[in-house]
Each structure stands twice: as C-alpha cells, then as structure tokens.
Image (tube, rainbow, N blue to C red; front, top):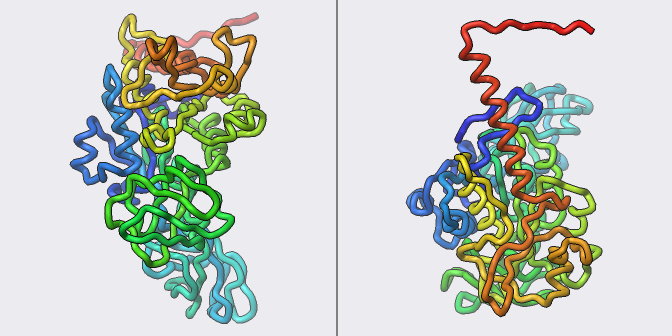
Length: 438
C-alpha cells in the first residue's frame, strides 16, 4: 500500500491511500505527514476531537467497508513566505549568494543583490522554517557581512504549497483533500468576541462565507461560520470560554483560487492522484455560470471531484467535509480483489446529511438523471429521492464529466500492469531483448 513506481511516465501509487491536509500542529513540521489506521489512533496522537483533520477523518473511516489507511498532512502556518530588508538596517559586507538565517525559526534566505559596501538590496527565501510571526527588524546570522535585519511581511504555506510539500515528504498517497486555512495573507484583519458569546465582528471588506471554518488567536479548532454576513458573524463549534474580548487575528478557509490551484497541480501530478473538495457557496445555486464548479468544469479536469454540501444553517456542521466521506468510501472499496469493481453513484455516506434542494437546483449542480436534458456542472450531491426512501451519492463524476470510478480503476489497472511487468522482468532467469526489422 505504501510503495510507488517512481520512474514511469504513467506513474501511480496504490490507489487506496487517502491524505487529509490541515494546519493543526500535532504533526511536527519536519515530519510533515503521519500514517494512521484508525480514528482512535488519530485521537491518541493528540488531535483535538473538534479539529478539521479529526472531523474529516471521522467521515473517512466511517464508511463501509472501512478504508485501511489514511495519511494526515501538516500545513505549516508559521514559516516564512515574504520577507524584505528592513529600512536602515541593510547590513554591510555581504556578497551575492550569502545564506543568512533569520532568528527564531530556522528559516534561511539567500542574498540576491547588493549595493555599495555590501549592503543587501534583495533576498530570496531558501528554507521557510517555522515559528515566525509578522514583524519588522528581525535579526539575522551568517553570511559574509553583519547587521542585516529583515521584515517578515507574510507567513504560512498556501494550500497548494502544503499539498505539494506532502507529496515531497510522502509519495504513496493517491486521493487527497485540504481542510486547512488559506494561509495568513489576511492576518491584519481583526475581530472581537466576548468569552460568553460566539458573536464575531470582523473588519469591513473581509471575505468570508457561511460554512467556512475560522482559526486563529483565541478561536478553538473546528470553529466555523454558521451564519452572518458583512462584518457580523456567528461562530459555532467553539469551546466555551475560548474567545476573549481582546482583538484577535484570524484567517479563513481556502478560497476558490486555492482550490483551483490544487486542482491544476493534481491534474499534472506524479504519481497520479485525485483531489476531493467540498463547497457550500451560494453562487453554486444562484450564479450557475460563475462559480468554482463551473470554472473547474470548463477546465476539463479529470482528477478533481467536486461536491456541493452545506451545513444547512448550522444543523449539520460536518457537511463541510462531506467529500471526505466519498474519499473514504472509494478508498475502502478499492481493495483490488476479484469482483471488487464498483460504481460511486448510488452509494450511501455515513455521517453526511442529504442536501434539501429543488429538482432544478440539484440538476443545475449534478445534471439531470439522463445526463442529457440538463448537463449541470458535473458537481456531486448527497441527495434524497422518493420522499427520502432513497438517499445516495449523485452522480459520481469528476469535473470533466468522467466517472470517478472509471478514473480510479484506470489508475489501478495502470499500476497493476506496471508491477506485473516489473515482477516478470525481475523474476525471469534471463530476458532476451529482440528488435523487429521492417
């Protein structure tokens, strides 16, 4: 389950290994990803029962048959992202190519340009490090010169950087999803809330949406926006007393741009992989020609599974991780044994509440049952039929319209053929290579 053929152009891994990436700090930044075989093992490792990783893993491991393995990956939110030379403290005696270490977190940068007397005029980050915060005049050590100080203007990995870093650390996962925040790019946005309330006030112009989870100073893990708009929001799933009256900094869930960036990366990634994501954005229903589903459908991605699922006004908070249930369902069923072929459509999902939509809304997302009269956006839904007599996943397609199970089994077949060929070549006592003449 944990090996890949890394030198083949059609490179794939064992296609029953999922990865969930979030920003909880239990996994050390240097470790990056840890393999788990049960939900209890995740709790024992130290993950909060309200953390996004745990909640998504709960859906992943709740499906039947149960998936055997799950990787949890770490998004590092305190590493260097953007730095600059502090005004008046550019140092002296440096040369291009010098490597300096920024104090406190092990991050390093290379001197790219210098001025007179070896003052530093340009830097590029070599290693992000961890444990940093946004601030000015951070001391450095190393290099040919002295007295250089840098300003840290942006910290934290983007969702794409986190996924890519997990690929570098662990090549064996096949399916992935992201449950961390968009990064600390809006760290200057402030909000206030009292310890006895879950009412959050944010700065005007902050881009937030119901269903997004919010993390940051004085906000418990697993907290999400259950209602609100503009500057006033309601937080749910927060631990009592976890909020304070002091100003707080926070960052919201991954944006549509983040989702598109991950989808583009996974489409061309080696080893071959599949990306699962969930959206509950109102534009999916209200602006069918201009939303994240429509964008990814137009791009024709074969390796992105798009699911529409909402908290339904806070009644079902875990629905924001609904695609984790689909990922767990297919990873659990894809065991490679004889007769194990399955279709994703019509399967039930434990722990996910069906969406209450009109026929027109459902068909606008997933298309009509005949697949012709209403093409839809190739999105997926967990729906009820015949007055809830039937509840199942509809319709099991990727953004391009290709069925999820077809993509999964083509990848599995590719992997099996590669391993069979290599086993034959390496086990035969002799191999004769011939050449045809035409």
